Structures are given as structure tokens and as C-alpha cells.
Picture 1 (cartoon, rainbow over the protein chains, first blue to last red):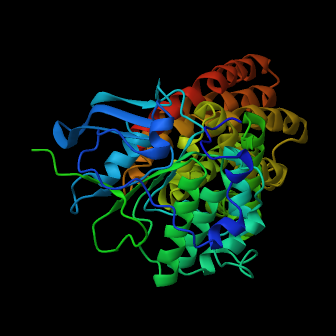
Picture 2: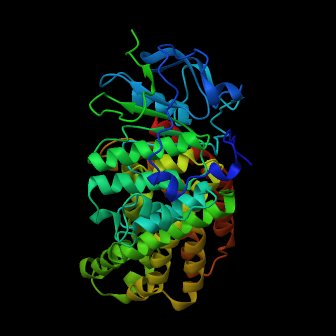
Picture 3: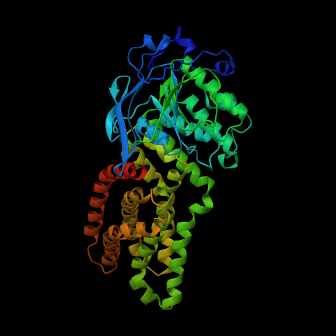
Amino acid sequence: MDTPCPGPSPAACWLTIADLHANNALQFASATGKFHAPMHSQATADPVPLLSARALAFSRNEEPIFGPIDFSLHAGEVVLIEGDNGSGKTTLLKVLSGLLLPSSGTIELHGETLTMSRLSQQVALMGHLPGLKADLTALENLEFSIGVFGLRAGNTPLLALASLGLQGYEHVAVRLLSAGQKKRVALARLLLVPAALWLLDEPYANLDKEGIDLVNRLLEAHARRGGAALITSHGAYAFTSGSPRRLPLRPAA
Amino acid sequence: MRYGTLGSACAALIRRDLLLTWRRRGDALNPALFALMVVALFPLALGPEPNQLMQIAAGIVFVAILLASLLALDALFRSDYEDGTLEQIVLSPHPLPVLLACRIGAHWLTTAVPLILVAPLLAEMLHLPRAVLPVLMLALAVATPLLSLLGAVCVALTVGMRRSGMLLALLVLPLYVPVLIFAAGACNAAQAGLPFLAPLLLLGAGLALALVLVPLACAAALRISIS
């Protein structure tokens, strides 16, 4: 097994449609107030955190954007990054994904330092832009992602689209989809690629209430099979299930 | 669990680009139509004297093709940058220079190959001697990949800026001029009955160098552009 899977049986690790519809609420690691505090249950079973950042800071043109911050993220955790507009949430995710080079500090994935020249198969970023080609269909877009990033066992593009409520839209050009539907296609990509760490920038934006529930179910299922996720929110959308750990981000002074 | 391999990533990228071109096949013909229009205007402006046109035919064909490829250049990374797919490509765990080389290759295939195909027609319109046509095609086959590669570095540098068209042209033209001189020079030499191999070999050497260095430079430039 290439990815850590703290669950009882490996078969339970990978997301299936049944997982998505299961309403079983496995609680996320509860709020601790401090980001570097030791985590409970599943988390303590895996001593090496999936992601850890030490004294991580980023400045653009000498102007500090965020940090320095320290935190670690263990398998099975979903952490909500909270902050006002301009507090550096998006930049933090870009730095953690390897898209931007941090000004100082280190990022470790499974205890190995992340470098620009060796980005990890373990990280999937969903940014503000959906990253879809408007002239291709949803299915063709997903097939491109699979070619580049790989495919999670037991999933197919059709299954992933169906689980996001996009049956019947597989062969529709993305240009013709609504903003919320594009978001769902981008979420379908997360289900397909074999990444353990999801970095989601405003995953609730443009989604209806049902879509928000869907994102929460996806996050739950992902955490249950040993994945982890960092999500940003400016606080307008409630994270409904469980009480996720929160990482407040303030603009650097 | 199956991780993407470098081969599958390159195949997916090329497949995607060809599919996108096919979806917008009308747009894909634009550079060739542009070159055709430019070449059609010259006899109108200079008069239809075959002897006069024959003298400058090779030069006009190369200038028209160079300008047409400049026209298509901005599309190389622009749309990928605007819809966020460039971020996904940069984030992929595979070596970025290799992926960009595939991207540039696909761009050459979809923009320069139609220009090469239309070149015999352009040459015929300007009464280029038929004996020179093989040299012209050979020069185009070596020069157009070089134009695509040199242009790609400049596009990668300017993709983060809005309305970078003028800046791009300023950056690209000095790099394109030597290619134009050698390619048109080879045709002119052939037309005058002189040896024409040396400029073509120089172009080939430039292409070999660019094939190796450009993807690396492109990757570095893109990382700067998206930060």
C-alpha cells in the first residue's frame, strides 16, 4: 500500500460511492485550540505527521503575507484554515502544495522535506480556478488529470462524476456547465487522483446547500480512509459535520 | 492505486492539446489564413511581374510564416494560465521541463505544421522556382520548431502579465531575426545556385541546442510567472 492507511482493513481505505452516501459521522479530530498539540485516536497511531510545517512564512516583495506558523496535520484530520480576506489563506495553500517557495521555514510530507524539483504525488490542490478546459467535456478533463496524476484504485471517472451528482453531464462541454457544476467536476478530480493530502481553497464557494453537504461527506470519507485535508474558509459557510480543528490565520504584522 | 507515469502524463497532455485544437479547428486555421493573406497582398502592391516576385519570394514566405507563428504564440500558455490548468501541470509530480516540451511539441504540431503544409502554395503564388521548393521546405522544417521553442520561453516569461502582446513581440523578435536570416539565406543561396547547406546546418545546431535548453528555461520562467 503506497499511502498510510490507519483503518482496520485496507479495503476500507478507498473511497467508494457507498462511502459517500454513508451518513455515519466519524468525528474529525476535535478542536484543540493549539495547532501543534498532540492529536487523539487515529492521529497518535501514526507518529509521523502527513504534513508538518515549521516556522513557515511567506513574503512577496519583502511584504510579509503570513507566518511564521507551525502546525502539523495527521492522517484522518480535516483542518479548517480561517482568516479574513487578504490574510494569506490561498497563499498558504499554494506554498504547501509546492507552487510557491516559502520565504522561510520548512514543509515536510511524511517526514520528507518538500522541494520544488520533487513535488509529491501525495498532494492535490483545488484552487480558486477550477483548472478545467472549457472546450473539453467533464469526462475528458478528468481523463487528462488521471493521465497526469494517476488513478485511485477502485474508482473511475464515471463513478466519480455520478457520486457528485453529475450523471448525464459526462459528455457536456465544461463551458456549458454552471459555476457550481464546474466546482463539482473539480471535486470529482480529487476523488480520482491518488493523493492523501487535499488542499482545498474555498471548497464551499458556488455550491448549493446539497453541494456543501456533499463536500462535507467527501471530506469525512477521505479522512476515514486515512487522508487529510486543509480547507480554507472566510467563515461565511458553516462546516456542518463534526467540529474540525481550526487554524486561525492572521495577516503577518 | 495507480500513480501517473511520465509517459502517461505526456500522452494525456498531447492528447488534450490535439483534442482542444480539434474542438476549435476554425481557430487553428487562422495562422495559415493570415500567411496566405499577407502573401496574396504582395503581388497586388508590387505588380504581378514574375521576375520581380521571384527575387523576393523566399523572403516573403519566411516573413509571412514568422508573423503568423508570432500570432499564434500567445495562446501557448495563456488559456492554461487563465483557467488554472497550468497550476495543475506545474503541480504534477513529473519533471516540468518534459511536460512543457510536450506542450510546445503539440503547439508546433497544431500551429506550425499547417503553415508548412500551406508553404508550397505560398511559394507558387510568388513564382518561386520549383527547384528551390525542397530547400524551402527543409528550411521551414528546421526553422519552425526553433521559432516555437524560442517563442515559448518568452511566452512563459510574460504569461503572468495582462496585455503582454507588445512586450512579447519585443522579446521575441530579436530572437526570431537570426532564424529568419539563416532560413531565408539558405533559400536565396539555393536560388542563386550557391551552396546552401551551411545556414541549414547552423539552424539545425540551434534547434538541437534549443530542444535541450528551452524546456528547462521555460520551466524556470513559468515558476516565476505563476508566483
